[in-house]
Image (cartoon, rainbow, N blue to C red):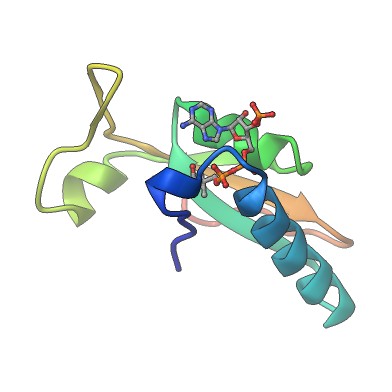
Length: 98
Ligand SMILES: CC(C)(COP(=O)(O)OP(=O)(O)OC[C@H]1O[C@@H](n2cnc3c(N)ncnc32)[C@H](O)[C@@H]1OP(=O)(O)O)[C@@H](O)C(=O)NCCC(=O)NCCS
């Protein structure tokens, strides 16, 4: 799944509330942790790291292989995906390193 807030409503705390809600609900459900994927640079990385997510591994070439159009941010093309995990308990090591 993707998380997104309408551009006209971004940077008002809505995304943080959405993410906190998912974290709370998953923790209550007994999950061991959460895994997310995002680009290797950009504000989205900070968005997840603020909630405690830590870099686990790199899925090299993910955006090249899985998106029909190139994705550019700040003039740089997204090619690789960073996998980040938030561990509630136990081992949630990423298995997707290429
Ligand atoms: C990522 C996203 C869901 C965050 O939602 P949001 O409602 O804007 O998030 P918040 O208002 O809670 O912002 C939290 C922090 O994210 C960062 N941030 C969010 N949008 C930003 C932007 N456009 N530029 C720079 N930093 C930004 C800021 O650090 C912000 O904290 P601050 O307001 O104290 O500076 C939203 O920006 C979005 O839909 N982006 C496009 C889709 C996307 O990239 N999804 C994630 C794919 S991995």
